[in-house]
Amino acid sequence: MPAVSSPVSPRQGRYDRVAIAMMILVHLVALVGIWLFPPTAPLLAVLAVSYFARMFGITAGYHRYFSHRAFRTSRAVQFLLALLGGMATQRGALWWAAHHRDHHRHSDQEGDVHSPLREGFLWSHIGWIVHDSSTPTIHENIRDFTKFPELRWLDRWHLAPPVLLGAGLLLAGGLPWLVWGFFVATVLVWHGVFAINSLAHVWGSRRFPTSDGSRNNVLLAWLTLGEGWHNNHHHFQSSARSSSHRA
Image 1 (spheres, rainbow, N blue to C red):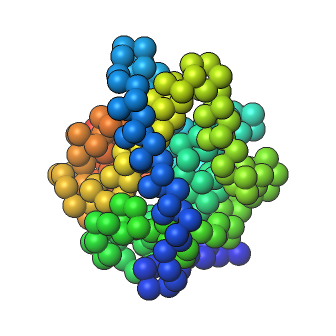
Image 2 (image 1 turned 30 degrees about the vertical axis):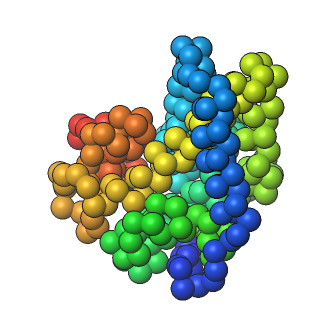
């Protein structure tokens, strides 16, 4: 069956008030938590481990593996990548990859789920995620992975991985670890990944003449484990390599 473009658009529905409230709550808890538990070397270490581990789950798992099939691995590692990516609190791997495939199929054209050139910064950065038109998982776009029941389970119960992470941090280090390892790290991971959607098509340099506005940005690359080399990626979409060099 051919791939189906998801009708993700600010004109196709309404904003999800529950999703917006949850995002605001996470940001508020992070801000208040920083005030209640000032940064220390151990807390910053917890923050760094949580941030980069989950960013790896998004970059290597959700993006390179599930969206682009850039490398092969075992079913067990596949599940672990989906679990780790799920801890970043960006829904399940099937949902993420299905929408991302639409982004590449229609990059900066009609059908692109988060083009800043078509719908502006706020929509591409965070608006589309809290809009009910983006809620469904377009299974026709991701049939190569929907055959795995464990991935369908993680997609349906996408809050389970972040809850598991939060519970583990709370048990290991109490409220300070929960604040810095989950809430603060989640906010940073969110905006790091979202910035690729909103900024990496308008800010940076272009090495390859792709048909979209994708750009390379060294700052975004450092923050996202290489995803900021976005123009390179749009030119070599199936490459597993996140770097400034030719794939």
